[in-house]
Amino acid sequence: MKYYKKPVVVEAEQWHPGKLVEGVCEKAHNGFMDNPHIHTLEGQMEVTDGDWVIKGVKGGYYPVKNDIFLETYEKVVTPRGDTSGKGEL
Ligand SMILES: [Zn+2]
Image 1 (cartoon, rainbow, N blue to C red):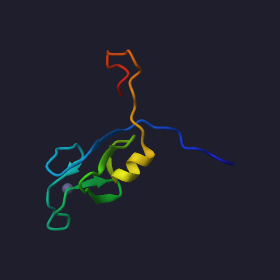
Image 2: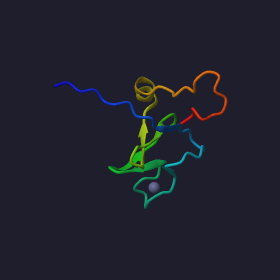
Image 3: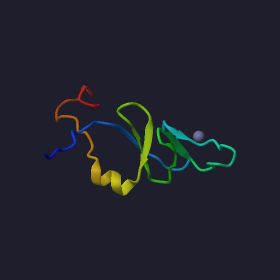
Image 4: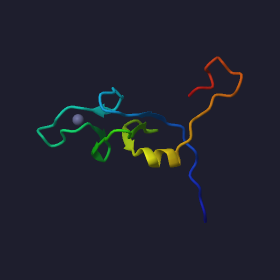
């Protein structure tokens, strides 16, 4: 049997040093992780300039490299003529 993954809409924001992005932790934890990182369900993952921070469907955040992000994600476009912003997710 073959399956394809259902499209899922997620919130994502690109991170750059000095930019405040929800989910990114810049605290040092006893020298263990001094660089900006994300506390994911699988542990701490470092974020580097240009990484995207994605809010998972079940909550929680995880980083995705810019090239991977551009390859796998498409921006949700609000229908033309709709200026109410309600088409925005
Ligand atoms: Zn932290």
